[in-house]
Length: 350
Image 1 (cartoon, rainbow, N blue to C red):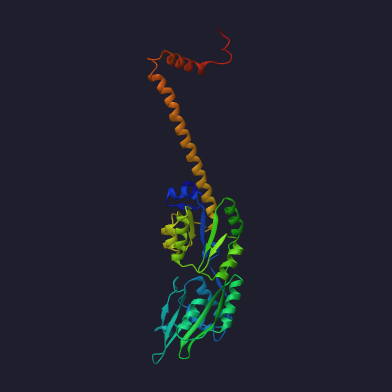
Image 2: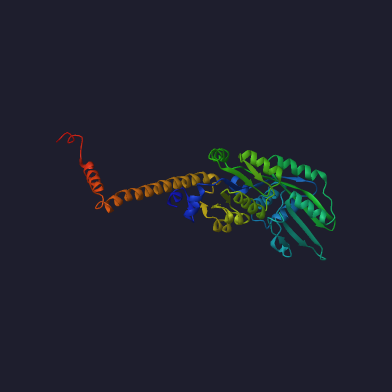
C-alpha cells in the first residue's frame, strides 16, 4: 500500500494490490477514463429550429457537455439564457443511464406543455415515434456521420402543439487522453486484455476504440451490462479489473477483483473502488500490476525460504534426538560442527 501511495494511488485493501498481479482483463469506462471527459459541443446540425431548444434542454445540465451546449448557443447564435422567473414552472428531466436522455417540460399560458428532450439518437427517435411523430431519414445519416468520425451525436426533439418532431443534432467532440495507445500496447504485452465500455452507439465506440488501441469494446452499455461483463469474465476463471469515474460505474467497480476509481470521479465511484488513482490516469494500472507481480514474487521467495529453513531445522534436530542411540550420528554431528571452523590453511596440520 505504501508503494502505491508513492505513485499517487490510494489502496483501501492490500489484498487488492496482490490481486492486481494476476489480472487478466481490464475494463475501462470511456468518458473521463480513456477520453478527457469534458466533451464540448462543436456544432449544431439543424433539421428545424434547433439552437433555442438545445439551450433550454441544457440549462439544468451541470455536466461539461451540457455547459458547452449553452456556451455554443450563446457564441454562435447570440442566445441568452431565460431569466429565472421565466422558467418558474419548468420541470427538469435529469439524465439517466437507463433512459439516455434529459430535457425540460415547459408549461405555457393556458396549460399547454412543451416537452424538449436531448439524448442518444436512437432513444430520441423512439421517444418521437412513441408520441406518433416521424423522424426524417437524414437525422440518422447525420448521426452516423458524426459517430463514424469519433464524435458523439445528441438528437434534440420537441413535443408541443405542433406535435412531436426532431429538431436536429448536437455534435460533441471527444478527445482521447495522450499516450493511452502506447500504454495499452504495453498492457497487451504483459498479457492483459483491455475492453472499453461506453454508453455511446457502436459507430462512435468503434472509432474511439480504434484510436485508443483497446482490444475490444462494449457499446451502448448500461450499468447492468458492465456488471454482467465482469461476472462473465470471473465465471470463466479470469481476474477482472475495472477503472471508472461515474456513479453508473459503481456496481462494476464493486464487483471487480480490482476496482480503480478516478480521483476526478463521483463519490460513489471512489467509495466502491478498492483503489483510487489521484492522477486520474487509466493506464496507471500498469504500475499497479507491476507492484502486484513484485509482491507475488517476494511472497513466493519468502515462502520458499521459510519452507527450506524449516526442513533444515529437522536435519539438525532429528540427529540430535537419536544421537544417544546411534553413536554414528553423534560422530557425524561432531564432524559437522568442526567442519565450518576448518580452513584450507589448517587442513594439512596433523
